[in-house]
Image 1 (cartoon, rainbow, N blue to C red):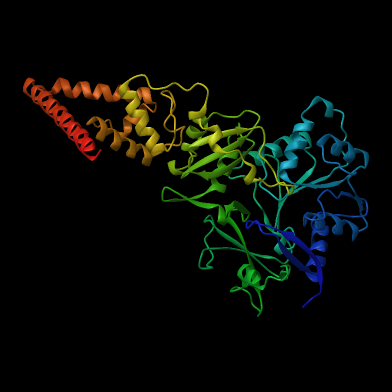
Image 2 (image 1 turned 180 degrees about the vertical axis):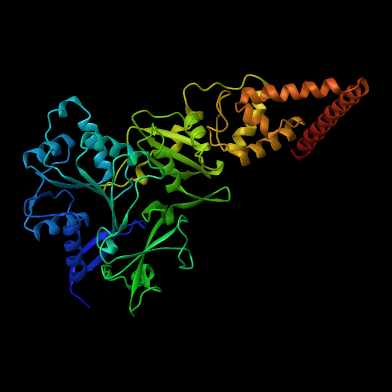
Amino acid sequence: MEQLAYVIYTSGSTGRPKGVGVGRGAFAAHAGRMRRRFGLGPADRVLQFAALAFDASVEQIFPALTCGAALVLPEHGLIAPDQLLTHLQHHEVTVMEVVPAYLGELVAELSGTGAADLDLSRLRLLVLGGDVVRPADLAWWHQRFPDMAVVNTYGPTEATVSSTVFDVPAGVGEWEGGVPLGRAVGDRCLYVLDERLREVPVGAVGELFIGGALLARGYVGRAGLTAERFVPDPFGAGPGGRLYRTGDLVRWRNDGQLAFCGRADDQVKVRGFRVETGEVEARLREHPGVDDAAVVVWQDRLVAYLAGRRGPTGDEVRDWLGERLPAYMVPALSIALDELPRTVGGKVDRGRLPDPDQHRPDLRESYQAPRTPTEQAVAEVWQEVLRLDRIGIHDNFFDLGGHSLLATRAVIRLRAVFGVDVGVRTLFERPTITGLADAVEEQLMREIAAMSAEDVEQALREQELSEDVERALGEQDRVEKEQQA
């Protein structure tokens, strides 16, 4: 086995760090291929921005040093966008690689008046990688720097840094489905496979498997996990070939580019439907008021966290997504944030997303309690169905997390309480407690008006009889308690 070049620890989707061992052959081959792919030469000055604990640093350091280019190190503690931009200008950096989230911070800084005189004319190439790219940031960047090349890269640590590259053209912000991952770099082989390791057709979603000579050796000291993630290559010509199963869901576009569709371990089941949260997030990022989005499951419903310069309302998001996605994929609750929390690697830190309980409409200060017995009865049904402790009479059933299945349950319970059928459609048309209570009372009045005098007299007799029975049972219960005492 070839000698080990380096070990980089990654938690991936499991949360437990694991050491990825990369051999010298894969390491050297990748450095040479990226040097040629980026057109690096002695005249370049490459920013070394990623921490050494991340594999992006390998791609920034060694392609530059092996061709005589200068490696520009950031100053100690250099993180703020304004400091970095000044650093780029002062050191005449020509190539910069950052994560997409940090690009958004650079765009926000450059949009300010203080950056008007900044000269980044030497910067010829912007490399993005490590997370989903926001088209709005790219559109702004292209407009500000029309002559600068931009590439989007993708690759797990287990496949030796970047496995794909996509040259981003101007106008990518208008593309449906976001920024593609691109095509394979070097001798890598890309396969989009189903659960039985069969290739899926163009346009169909499957899991991405990466093969070729540039795969890592495996996980240091974890033979079982290595065997689980690095599987035999059924398509390779020679013996001993392996494929790394990434856990990423992708599809082939008609133009031969690979498109990202989410994570296999992010696939969730909501009310019996399988949902790819990454697909919902991609759609949300297409909304003109949304810069970034994260979708999670909470109490059997989807919750969307939205970051944007103009945060859309929950109704706006629901209506907009409803025209593009099936109803079961539309988040029941939308929470607006200034920005999404990020890990040090630039990815969304889902563990730090706010608790949806603190953003439910039933907790708002404008809460109004039920005023009539009918409103109180409707509120109690909603509290049971939606599993909420308090609901105001003007709160929207669907803003509280309701959906078609819960609406059906609510209508069935209301029928048992009032003896009338208001219908699911009525709940959609009148999605507040006060509106539905009015509908219940209107239905009761219609049924009473349709009753004959004999029917009314019979109903009154049955009510009186029922009351007499209840009083008798209450008296019997009182006597039994006295006898026990």
